[in-house]
Image (cartoon, rainbow, N blue to C red; front, side):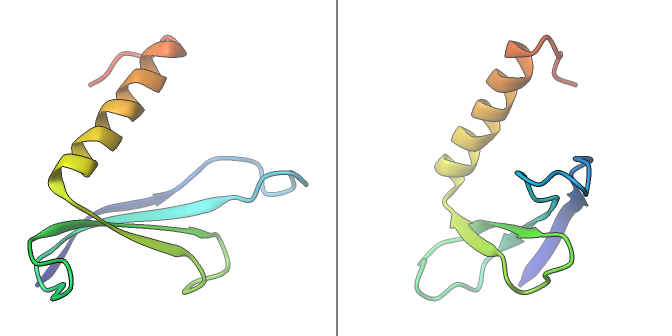
Length: 82
């Protein structure tokens, strides 16, 4: 089973010569035989290049670490978490 949680793309300008505009998707995944347990699948790819991105299968602990890092970065720039 793979269930999409959310997806989106960044709002970075498309014409920036140094940084690509990216899309992302997050899904719950429980059919990764190699993983041995349910995972969170994170896909990041350049907008306009479907299938050429990077897919990570994060253990729950790693997904929580990523969530925490995003929260820390938001606080650093003065944003409050919802």
